[in-house]
Image 1 (cartoon, one colour):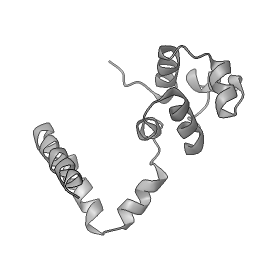
Image 2 (tube, one colour):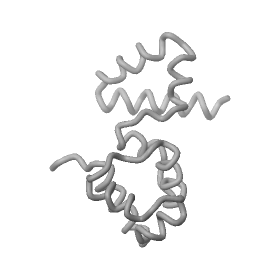
Image 3 (cartoon, rainbow, N blue to C red):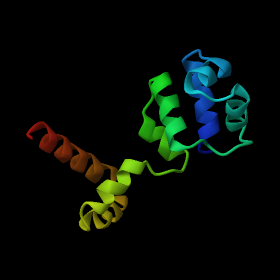
Amino acid sequence: MDEENFGQYLKKIRLTHNVSQRELANNIGVDFTYLSKIENGKLEPPAEDTIKKIANFLGEDADHLILLANKIPSDYKDVLKSDPKIPFMLRQIGGFTNTQKRKLFKAIEDIERNK
């Protein structure tokens, strides 16, 4: 199965929420024809601020949509710069098995819970 692109996913979640292109466009401050072109793959995904508005209006995860648009959320840059070991850590995680990733995520959740 082909990986879903941003436009296809946007259309799917918009329809799941029973929202028309016009309604979404009016609520995020763009023209509905712009959304139509994005959904049909005629335009690239919008800028991060517009994606965040879409996510907020539809009750979706903004980071997921931003990443699906092949963009890096702007606040990630600060995290990456905060410690020189973080880029190394991310590269290592890329080679982890799903089991190793689940253990790591659980450990992070435990740390967060015990702050």
